Image (cartoon, rainbow, N blue to C red; front, side):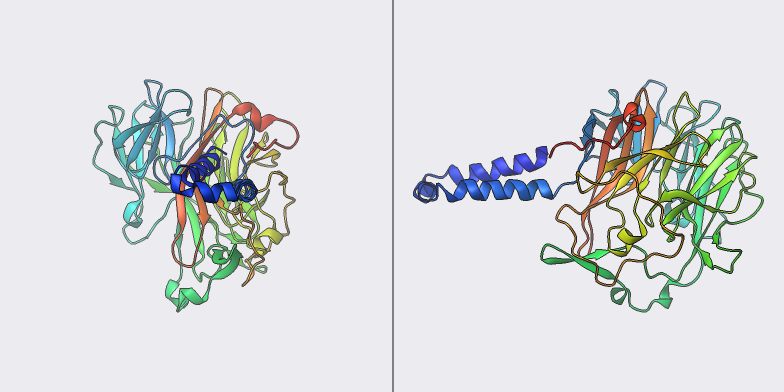
Length: 429
């Protein structure tokens, strides 16, 4: 990896350049090459593995957000109130400065829409000049309901309807008296790290959609109520269906994917443009408790999903979001194939994880020691344009007892990579 190599060169130069150190270096002629080799191996071990087909990788912009192609051909990444632009398929990005906060949508009329989810409410604004000016926001969520939304989740269907998946919590967080006593841990090197996520929360989450047929002037809820996971018609328990994302796979036919604590992504379908939805059912995608991104591949009926693939056993061992994978469905989400790893921590890692039985999974109170290369690649957003797939995500290298070491990341891959047969080849570190 370039970063590791640069750090190694810097270390080498800092030890060799001062004249006063020369006698020590000469007397250590056998030791220094050994130490440098050890450091090189450690540096290589502490970075994730990426596909050999990778076109570009970046650490720019903010967290969250989504992508959209402007009328002048530029692709914009809207994130944390900042816009980044690319004109070469994601190989280079230009800072566009502070802009309107929220996820961007291209409306059927050609105008832009933006969805803002700050302050636990969801609003919509419109622009008829490619984002130079915006209308006053219209609130779609009810004033008394604290509502959340996963970034890169809303769509404009072929009919022109705007569909915005949302979710909310029910219950009381204060029922867990001291959060510090409800954290699962594992050693990484000689330091304790937090593993797992949301393992101790007495607040199940429900999902639904808002939709608009007049380009955001008025909004409605889906007709058949909020969605949650019910196993065996409640006999097996009720569980969260959270951070939903939607995609249109055929005219008026939509698929929605949910994050759950049950070792799978769950999914619902709508056959009336989002007005009604089926009960969430388990997909064949083995998953940790983390959200997905899903897109229709232009010019096809194929769907591309990007998510944190993990087995139930891995979740229990504290390896929950360490693998960012992709798969393709050619039947509207009924099945998924051509699994690939986009980011993983082992060059010999498997690209397909057999789905575990549907049940609640939680990391152990003290999980096994984490590998030196362990990191998270989470909360993806996806753009497919001109034969390339641009994926943004959060990279979390360490999760000590206080705070996270988090930075934005992007990777660019050719669309052919996702259709390639067999396991993907990892890039050399």
